[in-house]
Length: 103
Image (cartoon, rainbow, N blue to C red; front, side):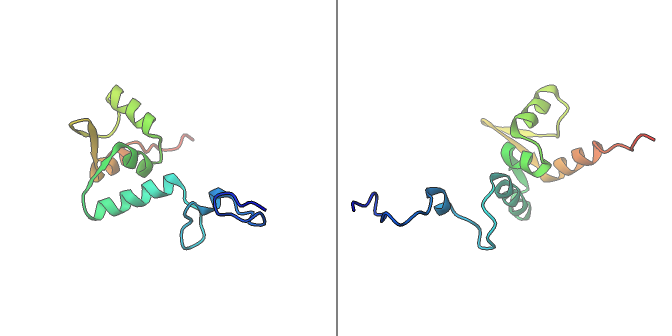
């Protein structure tokens, strides 16, 4: 039989299975990757780009942009075309969002 792209006909692995899985067997998740990058950034550079900050807060990047536009989101700095969030500003904003449960 003719092989396609070096695969033999009995090789039934999907192309997606070749996409890197973590060593612990958990498949890669973009949100986990962004959160991990945010965690590493905190050790070095305390500033996160919008996508990392959104992952850190558990919201989407577009929602973070909406909050920024309304002026109700965390403090940010604008450098060229990038919006940067300091990790301490994200924590402070998140803590300020907590509310007491209604009884």
